[in-house]
Image (cartoon, rainbow, N blue to C red; front, side):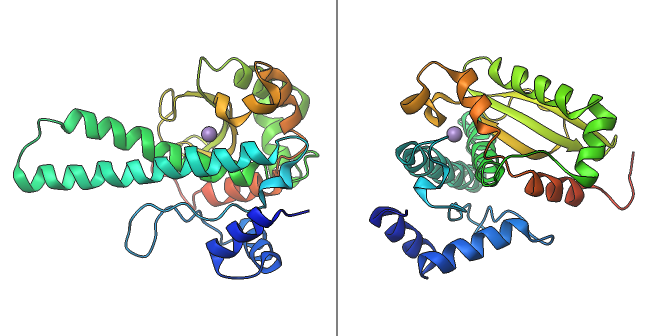
Length: 244
Ligand code: MN
């Protein structure tokens, strides 16, 4: 059941009743034309509403963790990404680039946090199971089987050094589906990859419930993965034609 707090949160976020809010966001994530809303009408970075209530991932992820994660880890990254861009604009205006290195690093770190969190919320908005159709075929082709793919994804995600992410991405330039580790929010990428499934292994994503047991958290995540959304993301990343 939705708590009063989550009800207020959702109504405030979309200005509608909770059922309508949920229907809209779930529908959006399943829509073929869906794209993540990373910015508002003014071009400023903005966090979209969660595609579920805080308690929707229980018992895999507890409501308090989702609430803290969204409000005190995702949202501040959005604020900081805007601040980095504003600071770079001021630097251009004043032709004072003394802090350019700091704000370029901030932009990469904070914007990547915003992007990966946005995808993560949809990645864990499902009911688990296994991928189907085109995504299942791509997994078989690139990894041998779903079992081998899952074994690599789990191992890679658990082994992320310190804070970071397990990432499944489609690489349009090569047509490959690949698994990457990401440290912090922006390190260890392969340029051009389009993330289609994101697993957050920062401690803030699981520590209240799982403490040091990252492996247990990652294993449990598979019961809430939204494979349909991952399939849509892969489809959207496939180019009509390639430049390379
Ligand atoms: Mn996080």
